[in-house]
Image 1 (cartoon, helix red, strand yellow):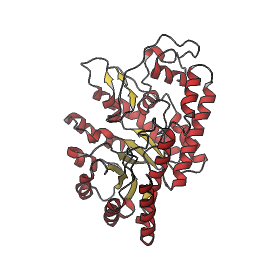
Image 2 (cartoon, rainbow, N blue to C red; image 1 turned 60 degrees about the vertical axis):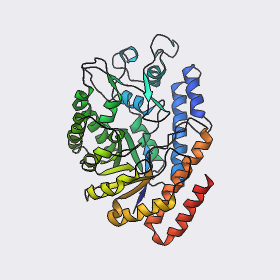
Image 3 (cartoon, rainbow, N blue to C red; image 1 turned 90 degrees about the vertical axis):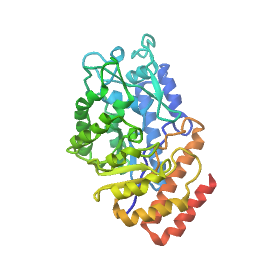
Image 4 (tube, rainbow, N blue to C red; image 1 turned 45 degrees about the horizontal axis):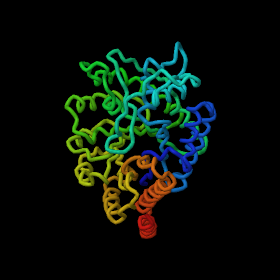
Length: 380
């Protein structure tokens, strides 16, 4: 049976309620408990919308108070000294917002800390907080929101797939304090954190984890390519089935590398790079699940159903139960503009994914599913 899943959902809330709560928090008009409660409400609403649209496996951990890279920096303990909690103090949302917007971790004193550097999230309009690494960088698990979100979603009865930024993409997106320092040298120090996270998720009953490695769509230096084989051979020992996700482009010269990584599944973007499908299918190991990103996660236009179904029918014959269907990338893209409109279309894209999966799983309903997806596409 083809599995319908998504790589991530919008975060802002239908009526910008999360953004309003964040502003109130930063101004001292809402406490941390109140802001966290709003976050739980927004996450629950988005999980419900995806589930009702027909998504089988829901992303968890795609939510962020600012951006996903900053969330990972907090998770891994990559916190600037000027906002680092003293002693054994735990990081709080005040820590996160001080990293994102400058100011102090003191909710009363909003002065004293610089704003960190930001950069574009690949070729989108979204930005992320650039991690800054030192040669003596130490990593430690200092932010446990991912595990809390898994508990939240499971308590609501959902089957979940936690989302985490891959170690090499995370290091690639950062910068070194010392120009002579190679941040790739940090990867062996970072991997124990991933092992710790995977074990904890396994203890929570998680089966699959989504590891985002979008830099595999870039022209990488040879030392970074070599690191991929080393890193994922080490992570192979950790529990959980691992889905490597790539997006915003094709794998190009990294196709063979990505296809043969020792993981359980691979997601490819067939909207940006449909030409990679035949070659990848031929090179994919027979044990590995393939997730096809056939619904455009960045464009409000509907799916080309005829084209998608042609690919899916072929893939189903070759892969059987190892076939997953998804948007090309996270549905986060565009969510800062006209949130009501974007959320509506995000739901539509989930419905298209679900209808395509249904058409593959139940050939007798193919005509109905195609007609439904075509109606959704035309409505856009």
